[in-house]
Length: 134
Image (tube, rainbow, N blue to C red; front, side):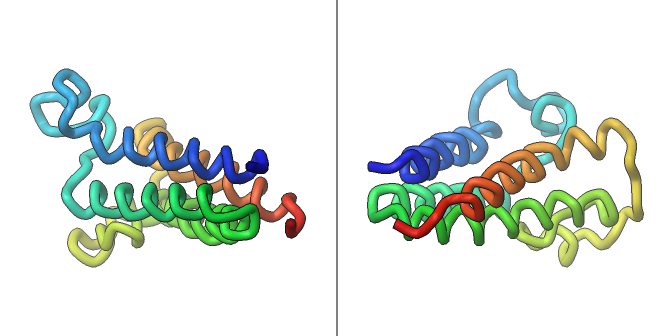
């Protein structure tokens, strides 16, 4: 098993944790905001679980499958995080289509709300693009 496959399996666990945040007592406030920063709904949870299963399958399948996952997942999540700065919502969970745009905002709250997708997407993109074919 290559390091990229191990990273993909690590992404499985990280994304499953993200999908479970709403269901762990104490991680959401009285307004339903996770860590008091952002709201997660069934669309977010579904996206995280689907991404996690993709990561697990890729990690268990091969180095090349993991590389493809890292590149595609990484770019999608990275651009979703960037998109969040300009709209307040992402496109992967269809939030921009169900809520409309809140406009551009680079406040600390907006940075923290988009940081998970920026970090996960950025790391995955770099790892996938730097990894050679097996």
